[in-house]
Amino acid sequence: MNTKQIDYCIELARTLNFSRAAENQFVSQPTFSYQIKLLEEEIGFRLFERSGKGAALTPAGVQFVSFLSGMREDLKRAIEQGQNFSAKFKEAVSINLMVRQAICFLPEAMRLFAEQMPDVQIVPQFQYENGLDTFMKGDADMLFALREQSKQLSNTAVHPLFESRIYLIAQRDDPLAQKNRIKESDLYGRTLMVGGGSPAALKAVQHRLIASGRIEYFNSADHDTTLTNVAAGRGVCLAPGFLNDHSGQFAWIPFDCAESFSCVLCTHKSDTRASVTAFIEILQKLYKDAVAFPL
Picture 1 (cartoon, one colour):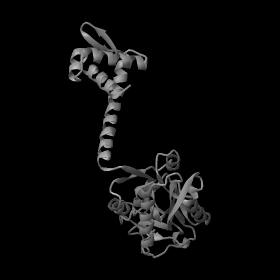
Picture 2: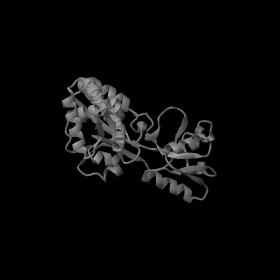
Picture 3: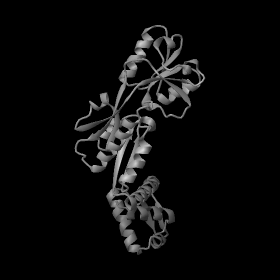
Picture 4: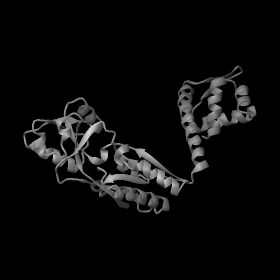
């Protein structure tokens, strides 16, 4: 099945007349009819019933054309995007992240990279779950991950980015927001949001706090749900600094603990493109220079 046959099929379903459909597609009727016949032979069932009055969709044809129309629109958009890409860019480098704020310097890195390599496009891909699988399938060139996660990946080069601490997230008018550092005892009598796919280091801290018996806890499905609960005054939570969107909506206060997160970029060992190396070096420099930036 090719795009020409798809267009012919959709047009015939619209007009239900071979002559008119062929004319609208700027081909002769014999050519048009032959392409419809080839399409039906390929898929293995009849799409149209022919008669002296024209054509009528079979029940199977009705369903098929419905799906075909949606597929053609998706294909059209894909072709248009490809044309836009080919007109400006010679290469693309995709980076998979769980959330946009995971790499807070990503927009700045993309801007600097565009100045250095204007014909290469950086394509962020956001996938809260299954990001590792997407990377391993080769559907992403780079992956933002924690070092502990990178140990699961084979044939992968690991590039250090930054160390991220654990923070307490609270409403800005919460008394805890006035502190410069949060200790375990500061949370006694409070409700702590836990769960939501927390990394191993964060789970260890959460379990330690709950084990004290002096802190209530509430299970939350994911980070966005947790922030909604914090905004609703249902409790406070602990989170890695790399999830901070720096919007100022919440207070992020450093939590006094030894645990932290080693944030890295993973690339495929076989991918030795200069563009990939250049982008990683730009990101690493941005984080190295951000000495006072909370992470």
